[in-house]
Every structure is written in structure tokens, then in C-alpha cells.
Image (tube, rainbow, N blue to C red; front, side):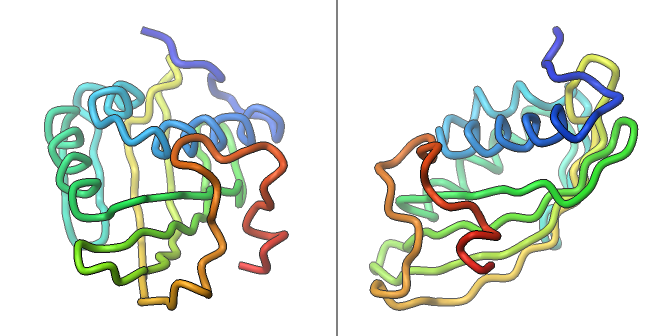
Length: 154
């Protein structure tokens, strides 16, 4: 299975890969998102270590069951060869209605078919007031005309 764009990345293809990842996560379909990773993909997400698509899918099911109305923006930080570094921010609320914004960085490594074989994520979050939310598009893909992280000053 091939998942273009493929490494080695250019600025254009790395930017496209980051946006495709953002679009996938904003779709919040754990089974579909997990297909972007190799069957034996290795993850570090905060202090949680995962290996393989089944573990990734289970993690995403748990994540989106508790992070409600999740909206994410990713931005390319840098790239080289088969690796991409991205930064991101996302907003969600919990089941009590408290809103949060999370910020983080991810380091990605891809195989020759464009599947992610390693994802290392560092994430911090904090509660925000409803009036401080910045991500207001309808659930799903971020509209092309919605500002990105840099334009929002993040």
C-alpha cells in the first residue's frame, strides 16, 4: 500500500503530507487514520508508548471519546529525506464542557511507501475559556481559508 506523497520530501510534498495528516485527524475516524501508519509503527505520545496499527486505533478511539468536538491545525516545521517535524495545536472540550487547547511537536519518519513508521509527540494542554477558542469551523476538515498556526500567532 502506497500513501503519497512519498519520501524524499520537498518543501511542497512535506507541506502536503502535514496537511493530509491534519485532515485525517480532523475526520476522527480511528480505523482510517491508523492506515496512515506502518503495521508495526512505533509511537510515543506524551508518556504513552504504542506499537502497531491496532494499538494506534485503540488509542485514537479512547482519545476522541474523551476529547469532544476536536479540531486540529498542523504546520510544517522542517523536513529532510524521509523525516518531517510538525507543530500543532488543537482544541476540544471534555464531558463537563471545559474547553482545552493543546500545543505540541511531532517528529515523523516514513517508509518508502509513505507510511509513517515512527511518531514521537510532545504535547502540553491547558484549559481555555469558550471566548478564547480560535478553531470554530464545522467538525471535519479545516477550511482552506481558515488561518493556520502562524497566522493565529501560535
